[in-house]
Length: 387
Ligand code: P1T
Image (cartoon, rainbow, N blue to C red; front, side, top):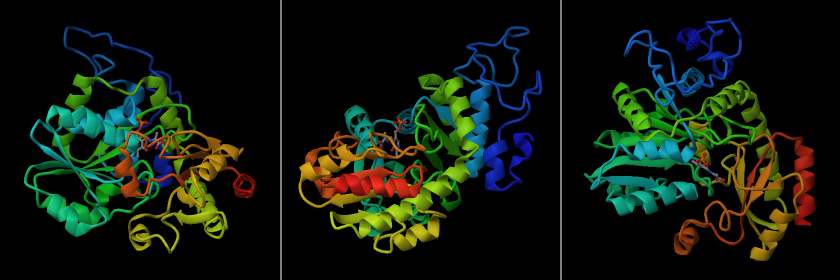
């Protein structure tokens, strides 16, 4: 099946087939890893499609880009060397003097890129709690050219109503970019809700096996594609062919993995919610989550990430994350294996103390990336560590 015909099919079928076809040279069913830097030209400037040099295009990367575009319901994909490289490409749509409106709770590295790399270069940054629509509307001043949000947010799992924000942004000159890393297209389709660009850290669920670092952008807009493709070619942080192959291999099972991540996370969230050593659990699937109704509306599942506040002090939280055995103490998320971490010390350390405190990223906060192991084993591990 060529990707030209893939969009007639349901999500699970597209996971496996979109963007891929038997290799034209041999009919190999699996897209080969094209380890090549360049392509032979018949005459100067005469080459196949866009294949003149591998920074511009590589067939393995092209297959991944088409696959991800199809899964997100967009027409165009671009694969990058990391999630932050894909964010960096979007920021390049702005120039000095422009303003970016950023959701207040984002991955620490995203905050660092906007605040510490681009703000000193003259791009203004406003951060706002996008669950507060009045505040967001007020923050959408005339100079805003890019609105960037994550939902669910990292790490406090706020759910932002993408359609509501898109409606506000449509009335302005800004572009709306949604980081869909936590939900993935298996659970949430931001383009269908009005986003202009989707960003991914493919390091996470799309890669799914903790064996690569990568990123991607998806858009349905031809003009945005041309601008982003030019930035990708010029800046050069492209996804290499081996990493593209690994992500492509992983998206074949994305629908199944996400289903299990969601099932296990729901069980664990309920279990921790009733645990005497846990102060509070944040999981979009719990009725107690402040935006549970929005999550039900815009997501088809609640994801594999749980955050919780451990009772006691930072030492109790440290002991919890250090004493799990099945849940490995590590940054990152979205792999088949369960991970646990302390955002304040680890993934969100680059956010200033006062801002972290205001967001609720405190000493007691622990983040779980619930893997697809047996849920009884996962629960037993968390219980023994809490005991
Ligand atoms: O690590 P990289 O592939 O560059 O992706 C950055 C990134 C972008 N967006 C979101 C929502 C992310 O969570 C990340 C990376 N996050 C972690 C490493 C983490 O442990 O939260």
